[in-house]
Length: 139
Image 1 (cartoon, rainbow, N blue to C red):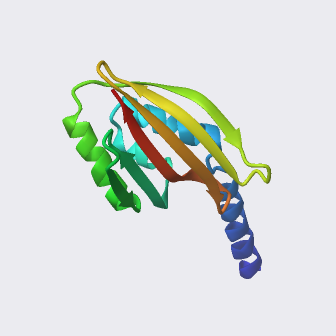
Image 2 (cartoon, rainbow, N blue to C red):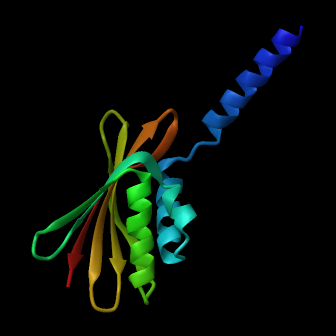
């Protein structure tokens, strides 16, 4: 009897994890709100742990970060350097034909420049998150 109850509890826990996972819309909302409010924990909740982040400067040079720890450090550095809070808007989005990937195109408006963000979301174990991010600056 104890084994059956334990098995039922494990099954319920697994099901609750499946159904409490984020959908693409919530991932993007967490990303936007995390950036706008400089909330690093909310922002990082949008990324998969093995995500990559590329920043392309106007001269074409790139900085790349791989994994949650490197991305967190880069984003925290951006928070420290930032005196303005951007207004972020979704420009467009598209879903792959097999529905395994959703790509969002966002713009972060600052006073003197804009950052174009391409976010590629994928689902791992029923939980959506950012796997690839590319940021380009437009002055």
